[in-house]
Length: 116
Length: 111
Image (cartoon, rainbow over all chains, first blue to last red; front, side, top):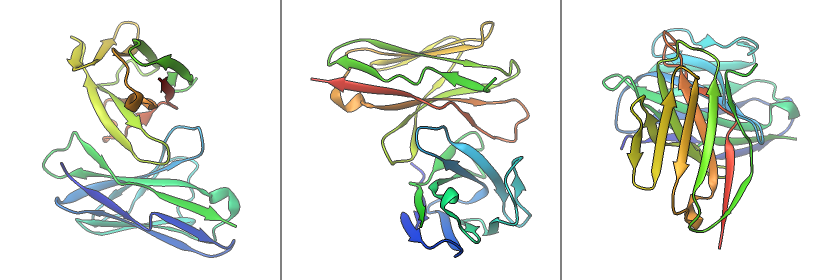
């Protein structure tokens, strides 16, 4: 099946620093990628939809200036958490949708962010 | 009201048991429905899609009742490896492929 990778798989950073998370589709082109966040014992919450070559669409309540998304190619989207704070500690998961099979999302393995 | 609601569990069952999970959704215009499985600290993985006619995949049976806006998952002959969180997922119509996830139901299968 289609493979999506994320890097890093986990990161610990100090409060106030910025963290970049990469999401790559390894064997297919992804015109659309999604970024989710999951807090412990809660559901995945969609943060934003990332379309290649255009600005990301953010869900209500998600600060676009804090969570910077760049989808510069058909295989790579990045999420940068700027000026991270402890409340940003969470499990960040991306998914990618193939340009040819638009009814299936393939999930990355997730990135666990801990902000001290 | 949450868009997708599930009983959080946990469901603690012995090996070999049959267990059923339920899910309700609020948007009557939703077009597609799925069950995902998520292991601890891992990404969700698609278990099966859910169709109005009902569908079965080995020990797993999914049912959809559009009139009641209700989805179910039945697991027969539970295995230890079935222990996980099961996520009910809905794709609203015209939703630009934005999946709506339930909070999940935890299943623990014990020897």
